[in-house]
Image 1 (cartoon, rainbow, N blue to C red):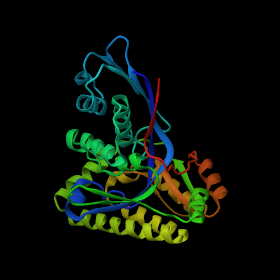
Image 2: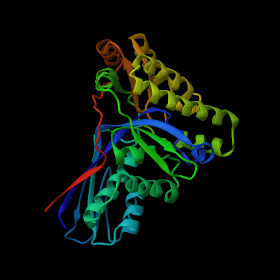
Image 3: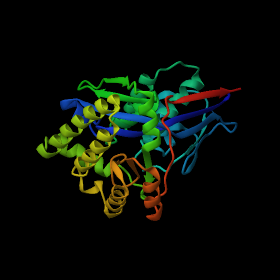
Image 4: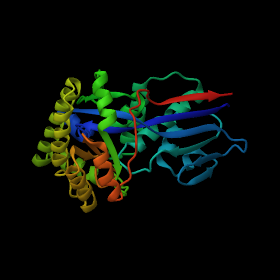
Length: 328
């Protein structure tokens, strides 16, 4: 088999995140805005001369059968979507896992894309996303939603409607060129220095939602409303109002779980606001990762964050979803 190089983008949730979990959307429907960015999970995939599976990620595995692979996503994806010769799959990423950008969903989409290319099969972003959701949510029972898989498969800045029957409607946002330029110039992303697993925070959300906890359901209802407002403000180009809404979003989000925030995150967000950030929020489920802020004077905020030891991660939006190339 030829060598396959593939990559899948990570994402930034731009409003409504958290309403994409089945525990919520199966009851009330979910809605969010999210954008793929030019930070990726990369894979190389090819057959192995020694005819044993070789998996290279943060660990190394070499086994005779796919069912023996320890990495749950690799194991379940290969067992269900591959019946050819043993493969070597190597993975690297632009940012660490546990930083709130949807890396596990991106990784799953990428593995599925690589296997489809290896089999010479055509696929679609929607099919890739649904297969990835099946692996993570239905088979592995991870307490995750559908946002990460859909954004990584589709790319771009889109709205995602999560229907109670499990179907997902994807609509690209047709942003004005000036709006997109403003977002690119005035959105800043800073690393808090703390990676975390989203599972604990999301597990708490799932349990409370499934128990029909009034406080949690009200919080997620408000989050969904913020998602709709975010869409309208981005489409209208009113980015100052959008930045202020980000602050409202964060204040609402931090009420969802005690593990959502810590002293370091609070300190960095306060510093960013004092330096002129209109608003911002932690990316992902919370507890660590990256802080996304909307600013008027980027250099003022950059200096404040640098002094606090929070490095910036420059980024752009990525309008292509997961892609791959086969080399003979």
